Amino acid sequence: MQLMPATFEEIRKKNSHFSASDIEDPRWNIAAGIYYDRQMWNFWKTVETDSERLNFTFASYNAGAGTLQKAQETAKKKGLLETLWDSIVAIAPEVPRWRHKETLGYVEKIKDLVNNVDR
Image (tube, rainbow, N blue to C red; front, side, top):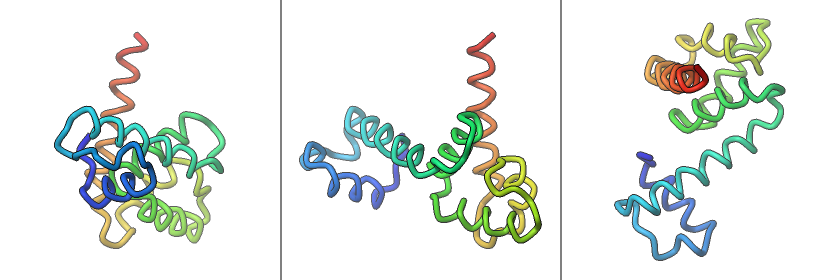
């Protein structure tokens, strides 16, 4: 799942069943990634539609929720609806210290995979 070590440690501290786990163990790494995705899904409860919420969830997995919150603030200042993914895409280059191309590409890859499965 490519969790950052600090994120994995945060998950371990919050979950006793992860206490003896190792980030290098695929089973625990995947379990921690799923847990983190669920945390991000719950974090974005103000985003109304499931498809929009998934975009924010996966973007947060890639860039961190704080980065997406900064993007939302920028979108709102520009008069855009901050809970729409297209608004975040539009202002992404303006968010300081965000490698937005990586995050936007990551979300697009997931969306493409989902669309290909549905066919």
